[in-house]
Length: 244
Image 1: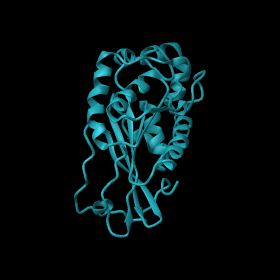
Image 2: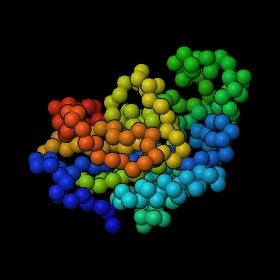
Image 3: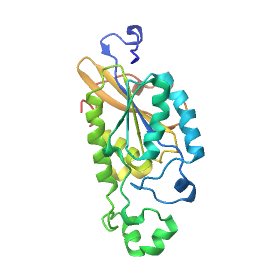
């Protein structure tokens, strides 16, 4: 059954906000080998399956209302570990697939530079359009952003949504959702296998603001208790993720 926060936990004048857990899949053999996976369907390895079980045991305590996942098996099987503990169905959404790396998929970083030196140098200089079959980080981020907003629209207030996907698309999608400028994206590190980030909605009357509450976490979210004014729901702060 979905978990509803008690009314006592809601500040006067405010409404219970929604929460989104952006969870990366467990480890694969290609992760260990340093091979680019992209949209190639590589399964979890034994360690990855155990990572999924361990993380699911923690995330289940958040009593999510929905689980949506990339349809690639490494993400879908990670999601199923949580579904088994919560009784929820895993909803598959191909829009949550990893960034398409095109001709680089299956190659290591070194092999990519050896095979595509001109294209890789262009990529390093900021031109991501040179690799055959690849999409840009901005394109992948926009793809996940659209899907994420649709799933959030279906989520009741006070509930938690778990989105299971992949490192690059989760990073760029979260930053797109929050309205962070693309030139700042490289200041945010990636997600470790079976780690997650948390987006938390603050609501005040009919106003909504989304915040990044956790990044690359492997432990349960904890309440922020400090004197920092940013910890209070303030509709005046705003961001491009608000009410969208």
